[in-house]
Image 1 (spheres, one colour):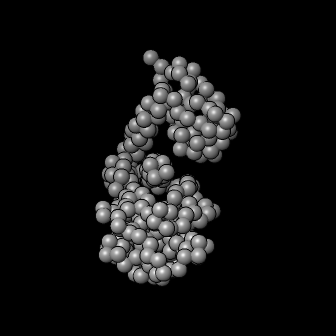
Image 2: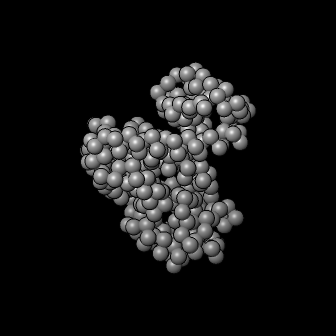
Image 3: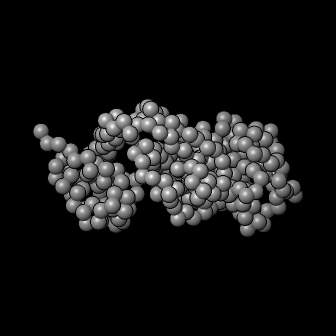
Length: 290
């Protein structure tokens, strides 16, 4: 019986998550030719092609899709075993900063995976706006942070495009001769700025109908028809809907969701493990949202 190489499994997942051999090479710290050779040998080992290529596009084959699921499980088990075998890697505290939108969407799966692999560690979560989280990273107050921005931050270790969406009541309709009312956070707010810029570019009058400091409060205002909001479409509350051009609304640009790391944070095993869990969770969430 042949044995799968876990390093190759990690490269396979990197290729799937980044969508290219070049991206996988950057992620696993190998040359592009080395990544290509690894995956070629993997195909020879299983006797099936893993990817179908059409120009720069790569699509998993049926065998490749099945193998990816096993690769994730193998690597999760490998990482858990390494953590369990080293007492120094299972203790300590790691601090994660997250935007409001992440708390009820991606965060629970991250916490579950981290607690399973590091039962003796403490995960401290700090919720806040992206600009504040980046500032706290720079001041070494947190170790890792998920942030939303127009461009990829310099200290990002993972980044991807995610769409923005207008979110309002199911029965929303833009009223003629009346300014569009926005429900938004106080500035500085990335989503607020994007909404205003899109409305002004489209020549649509607007006003701030409601200002909030918390996401649950913002959703309550939208449900009360005090305004519509611009947020990530990752999780739209019950009773609200994603609105589009059929509702008289302009297109919104995509934004970057990034995982950033403190430049001075020591490369501790617990931080690296949390980073891996976050990257996997974010990649799946972005894929589902797009």
